[in-house]
Length: 631
Image 1: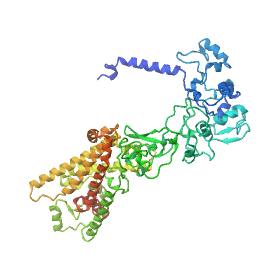
Image 2 (image 1 turned 180 degrees about the vertical axis):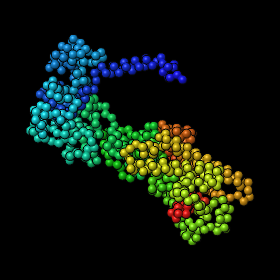
Image 3 (image 1 turned 120 degrees about the vertical axis):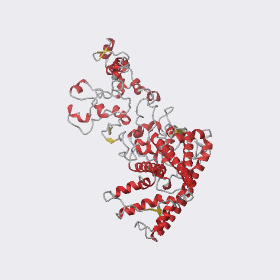
Image 4 (image 1 turned 180 degrees about the horizontal axis):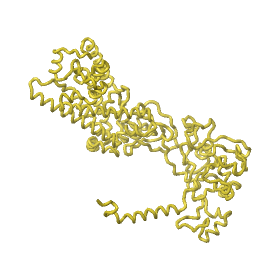
């Protein structure tokens, strides 16, 4: 057999290899354009060790010394590489100008395409080391604090700078952790990184710098938005540097700031707080003021409204004030998003509770009226059943009378008072392993009838798979909230989640339809056919069908987000629902949710009085048998 590189692919291989080496060579030979960082915050210790530490700031920044106002937006919003031209550097470095005239720089030929008129593209003037410092072992990328003794004895503080330099460092010296004035007083300054835990009660130094333009009494800088100082004073972040969140705010250009993800510092709420419906809703949608929720590819984000940076007000509104931003029947001041525009129902729906956990990621709560009623009847029904059990003598003892055994066979349940017939296993079989086989793998039913086992498996295993998936996501949201996997499992439009839920739902639907056909065939074949629980079957069918309808509505409401196509059945239904307007869908979605909840609650309430009770009784009975050593 020919190797792939000896086949028809062989011809392009040398060309691809040559192109790769050419690109690699260009990148290797071309000087880096990122050596100098365009930041106006100066590391005083590195500046002290630089070749320019003997200069005054205004020796280079002549425009600032001559300006009537500082700062200006023109200077802030230009790229850092254009802050200085080569003419300013040539005042001291005339030898560089002469060398460039000879098409050389640093003893090497000029590189084609490199702009040598912008020295700060490669050389950071605040940290560039002189020849003497480099000869003694200082390196620009190293830790200066570990090399201070190269030049002199270790010092606890930096020498006091001149008055003019100290005046500049009052605002611009904020990254080493110390800032000195001409009086020699050392003041603590918060570092721009971290989570702000070390911020002192005093206003951080970088905050002073920012508020000099953005504060209510800031400089008259045209276009500078004003911070709401009153809102800032009661915020959770009131003692933090602005740069803790706005990490690029001290870089050029200043007008290109990215929105700060809250999860950079914070951990998500657990599933018990936000519920799976909000796993793709951004923090800002609920917690920030002065924003409007927007839907984009299934994710609810925000648009910042115009105004004086009210967005920084992090106080969560009380009650449902933040909920109605998305869940509203009409556009209003409280809900500028309007009906259905973010894929939400027009009413605030209860979260999925304990009754939903068989199919969904829910919580151990009961928040809606149908679930409360259904769970109450369920508990009372099984309490009555337990009392009935204790009035008999054959629970867990295996002492079945011929009459009771005949009755269990006649009704087709294979049960006595809801319990399976005891079965004795070989002495060499582990009883706990036997319990696993009988409960999870349905071994007893498999031995009785392969057809019945297949029908039961199509109904039982979808519930088991979905319950396991939901529980893992719920536990992960509590124990591993900082990791991504629990939130992916909660995201219904994540491809694996969408596919698993859709396939399991279709398997359940197939099992229920097969059961109906099989029961009907049995009834037609024999006059004394086993008694089947048709109401339970219809209830399970109603749960499944309404679940698919709701999933189709949800996908249509959220704009057919990426990944939802993996839920191919739900996505197909969503294509039909997409013919409706978002307002119409939002209006009926809530009613659909309650219809699904009522059917689910009715099924749970019916369980103790139907053949569905074996879902609870059979595992309990087998567990009792195992504990007694009789399984």
